Length: 122
Length: 284
Image (cartoon, rainbow over all chains, first blue to last red; front, top):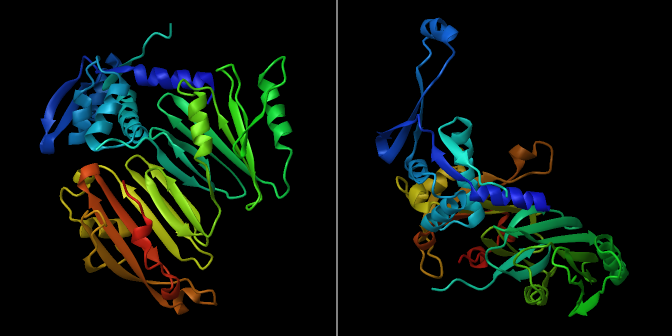
């Protein structure tokens, strides 16, 4: 592993995920959590959206495991803390827990439900 | 219960006692020319390479030549460390190399310790001293939390290492198979199913499992034994139809204390079946 790869790994673990401020949360059945994000579209798409019935918001339901993880994304805890918490709760190894956490975070960040605060390299 | 100070790694040609936090992150599953890399959360800590080398190579010169690439000025020192030849640079930013020739297997084994915050000479010597050969009639396969000892005829054919699901599959040249799988998040997996349902789901709809009775682990963990029938591979024309039916055995056990479920699947000709297979698996 090169030094840059190690730096990337350290940055990844030191990042702090936090919810998108525009996000609404609702309890979902089975202990899960529904994430609802308003969709902002350009004004000219308003009529198109009305014709093809585009929903005004996006919705994603997490199961209880995902919901528990999401609730810990408060902008204070680092990714490493989330990984350690999951590993301790489920007796997973560090790399197993990291795989699960990063998989979820990646999807939530890509869909803008979460924001990732990356520490300054300096 | 305190955590063990080391954990055994068993792979092609080598057995090593390593810090428990070191996990395999990269591997090439070839007996003649392969590699294995381990890391902890702070980065890669060890890489092992092996190559077929029927003759004894000039190992000291080879290590010195490789080490020379990274160092300027003085020629690198290569010193014996037990059966190993070791180059341990003074500069912590350079990798350390250790190599030995495994005459019985005709293989050159090289360990590389990259620059790592946790690397220190005592640890290197401890790792090298823990080496045991793994080329005998019984071979140990220990990685990703799985640990099994099998006769040499059983070759590692497939490896799946996903979060909360790891699986080794071994095969013989007669296409007999042993599959050892470990699943995490056990209380979630078994929240709505019992062990039998879980095992049947994993085995697939085409296989009809029969409950053969309880099979607790030696430490008392609850387990069950299932059997099933499957047509073995035939080598003749229309072999798939003419081959005899083999009885497969599937052990499933649950360790609530470590949130794991294990499945051990054995499909072989009756005369090749390993009677003591469950005892060959070590779980923590």
